[in-house]
Length: 64
Image (tube, rainbow, N blue to C red):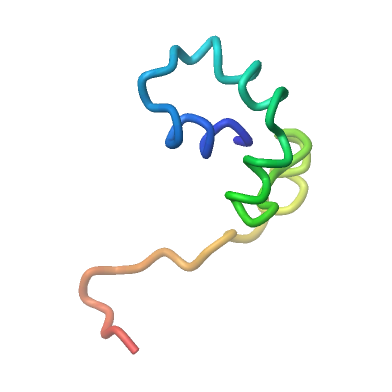
């Protein structure tokens, strides 16, 4: 979710304080995260319910 980057930038912060940090510095976190965000879980389901977001690597597949 959108709090993932906040958690990685502030790993010692309690989970319940992350939304406040994000709300207070939203643009900073979006810049740090290259604008990667979802508006809701519904958006995630609509986009990726029937298709994978990324290819799943397999340890036996050759790397390009």
